[in-house]
Image (cartoon, rainbow, N blue to C red; front, side, top):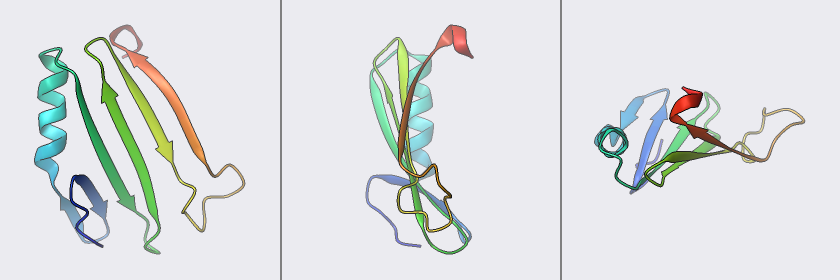
Amino acid sequence: MSNRVGYVVAGPPGLVNVDKLEKFYDDYLNKTSSRVALARYTDEGDPIYIDLEFNGEEILYTYDNSWDGFGGQNKGVQKTTCTKSDV
């Protein structure tokens, strides 16, 4: 698992850069615009990317499993928006 600068990385060996996710959560609680990028690695080593972008009111969630060799037929980029009332 590579240590991608700027990414919160999760994979079979563990987690890296968790402080970036904690900062994003703090920014969310304080209604401060923020962004965090996550790379989750499958057991086979394929990356799945997740981006969270908070604009002070809602979170844009982007999920990209296009690099996952075992991702099935629905591989690609998917996006959705979450608001506090969605939670």
